[in-house]
Length: 168
Image (cartoon, rainbow, N blue to C red; front, side, top):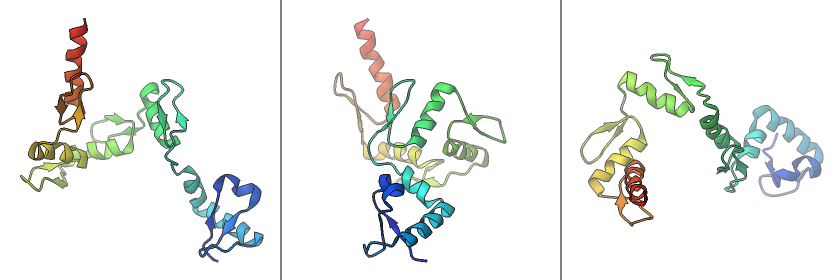
């Protein structure tokens, strides 16, 4: 049973357009065998769900666009209030499994991400990245109103409120 690459997924079922590992066309019986194999392994489903880079999935509530249906589904939980991932220790709930995993590290005390400059430890890689800006002086977030730069998006958002107060 050879591995068969699928070309042009949108026409997958109609044309049976299959190519082998070296690019040679495959016979229909090989294609049908491959389809069964792909279905069993869920490879086809995953292949079809891969993001294309285009934000073709649109939120019907707010219009925000996403590259994958999975990202859209997670986003829509903001509107529905759904938080399907709950902590067994304290009962706190989350919209994403990754948020629950990070949260559980609070209970265990696990901090696997270590700053190579000062040795401080963090629960998530994003917290480490944010901390490292203390050492580098990096300020990647800038205010479109005045051009001032900030190390975190949260600080930028707080700053932007000062411009709104000036208008009032």
